[in-house]
Image (cartoon, rainbow, N blue to C red; front, side, top):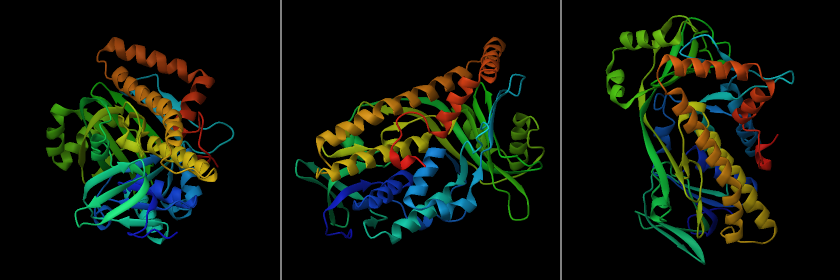
Length: 408
């Protein structure tokens, strides 16, 4: 069935960002049709300079991209993460993660713009996706018989299962009355692109300071050989406005001071953006004919770069559950299917959320004693191959009960 506005689709996906559009494409691969409704203008989201953020895509998430057919077009923009270096304020006791004798990477870095372009171009060609951009949802309906979203222009898009992929401030989740545990870290992430003197060697750096992590993430060199990385610098809420107001020269001086010379002299800084950091986790991720995915269900600290990858694991699990149900002739909104999705994803997402929250608090304890204890702990992990393998498998997203679409 071709998805058009007057057809009842299998899915009504509210939110057409990275998680929502991946879900629609994965559903189409399994023969399921979707209405995808998003408030944003895709032309603005993919414009040069709109968003300097870059995202680490885990091994499992890359398999998902391969299985929905967008990996080939993305490959040229990938910057492999060959190793991860973790330090406490650049003091002795560094922890290094790198693949074992079997090789491979610990993930790939992509500019967010390139991820959006790949997804949007694939969605525009997919007959099972009815993509409605620049649209405002004025009413959401869910009943035992189906779901519908009414738009500001009067159109009513109908389906069998509603999926909230709207991000942290999900109105669909809130309208459903789903309880949310949340707190504010009173931190902000300052994000910018950097050019620098030394090649990064495909190493991702995570340098911890009491105010928060200072991450340097490798990006591909420019065509002229200029070395590039993405900076994610966590500062306290109180300092955020001041850091954003610094002139480029003063900002670069502060960045260089915290880098400890690992990339040599920083030459230029791109457009800076600032994002508040908080934690939230829903008590449940389903309701009657409703499933939550991505940040609508769980928002975590970017300390381990797992936010999007966690959402893509939601996508994989939900698609597998729905596809299994379709083979049995079950409706996508069947309560037993939603219960299986809830059970599958509930514990994994909660454990990842707790782990990132714990790391944030552990590395945020000030003082020389706390720093010494952290460095002793990192040295112990460095000498314990089994522990290192566990952490690397978590980072690559290949641990636990993986959905088939996230496997090679």
